[in-house]
Structures are given as C-alpha cells and as structure tokens.
Image 1 (cartoon, rainbow, N blue to C red):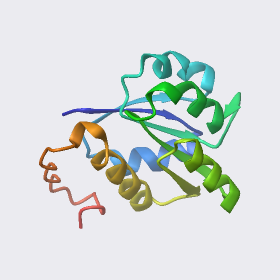
Image 2 (tube, rainbow, N blue to C red; image 1 turned 135 degrees about the vertical axis):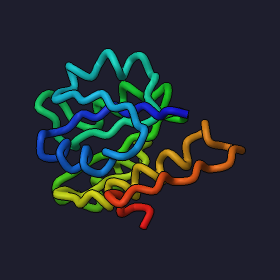
Image 3 (cartoon, rainbow, N blue to C red; image 1 turned 30 degrees about the vertical axis):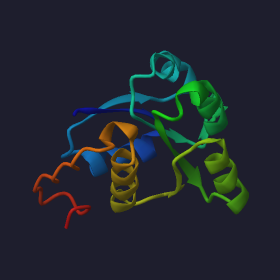
Image 4 (tube, rainbow, N blue to C red; image 1 turned 45 degrees about the horizontal axis):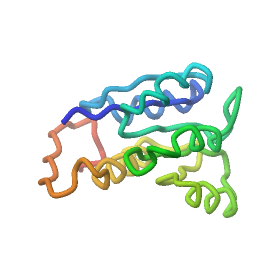
Length: 141
C-alpha cells in the first residue's frame, strides 16, 4: 500500500520531515497554508495529515474541524513549539494522533509517523510490512 500524507508546515519543519521520510514510499503533498491545503483536506484521500499548530491562516484546530467526519480514517500529527500540557490534551481530545514538540529531530518524526501508519485502520488484520534496509534511516536501526 502506498501511503499519502498532507503536510501543512513551515519551511523549517518541512526540512526535518523531508529528511525523516526520504527513503520511505510515502506520497506527500506539501502546503504552506491552510488555504492551500483545503482541497486536499476535503478530498480525504490522505492517511496522514501533519500540520503546524500555528499556521499563517489558521491553527491545527481548524484542520481537525475540517477533518472531523473522517478522523477515524486519518491520523493527524501536530507540530508545536513548546506545547503545553493543555495544548497536548486539547489536540488529543479533538482527535489528533500525537503532538511533536519543535524543533524536532528526524528520528522523532520517523517514530511518530511509523506509529500513526501502523495504527491506521487500513493495516488492521494485515501483516505489518518489513522496513526497507536503508543506512540513512535511523528509525529502523
């Protein structure tokens, strides 16, 4: 199965995320703003949505509200600068899969994305795929 991810994030976070998933067969649509991401969010064909907590034109809460009808089929990961305990609980309570504190390392991003995809309903009852051997990937070391 080829996974699709929609990422709404800053150039700094994009750089870390790209380095984390470079060797994975993950199709990514990069968007700098919520406005740019709306069409992809409405289509609902992504297994994973990764977004900054604060966007130039909205917040992660807006993203989760747009995805509310499909949250059982989509994993949302929020990237937040110094998230408070309240922010974490609010994001999880709204349906986010996890919150990653930024700046983050590539192994943190790899681990959370791997966990999100392994818990996705499309993998239920199926054998989990073996990771590809890649010396650049620390998540499988």
